[in-house]
Length: 360
Image (cartoon, rainbow, N blue to C red):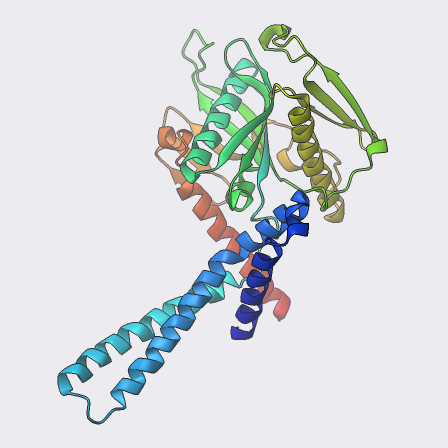
């Protein structure tokens, strides 16, 4: 373990030197890639350095206790300190062992989240807006940045579709389990008789990929520009800043009209396209049948839910792990940590069990 940790620390220091190289500073893509890699190593390097510090303190304390002329009172203090140091070393060793477990290589990446109204008409669109607010508030609590890419609002304040980027350390590791069909049970604002309706929205969480990771042939793109529009289709911009990119080999279409700059809209649209192409390739490797994100989020039918938000019972249930929490409003306000931590733990247990079976 120490050899692996030493190698990681060496790589961390190499990355620090590389990011100070003028040639790298002149190449934003390489600089960003190195920065991401270093960020992914930082926590474990900090832990390892603390572990070595504690090891050194233990050695010094043991040497002090070996002195036969040491006063009894100082010897008692040293023994007490030594016990605390050894306990600290054990905790750090356990933390380091956990940090060295195999991880999803995309965990440190930013994400692109796509929310679409499913079954339920206008109520589904309103629920999609609730989910967008929920993830935005959660990102705010984490200190992450949210950038809107594209949205198709309804007149009542819902979204038929909303796509946004979440930029922040570990965003994918925390949000990747949110992909799937989310179901809501409540009395819609459009319901005059007070009956509870069931509606759905689909969520897709895709890791944001760099140009080096997903290369796109410019000849495979059809790029169109047009005026951005608001609810009802009215033009909200007098110049053509909105961008629509079609990837001809796959038929994937990405639109971005949130920025006032055509260049920024184009950059955002390309980021979404790279994420979708990566997601598509991963599906092929996993031998999944569908070529679109529907394989990830399903069709939006009510029976395909991963999570239910039940308003009358103030209940949120994640059906994958059988967890029910009775703090629906807090969760919709972005307090997702209890759900996310439980999903991460379940994933870890499943991976460890799979590794145990494979090693037999």
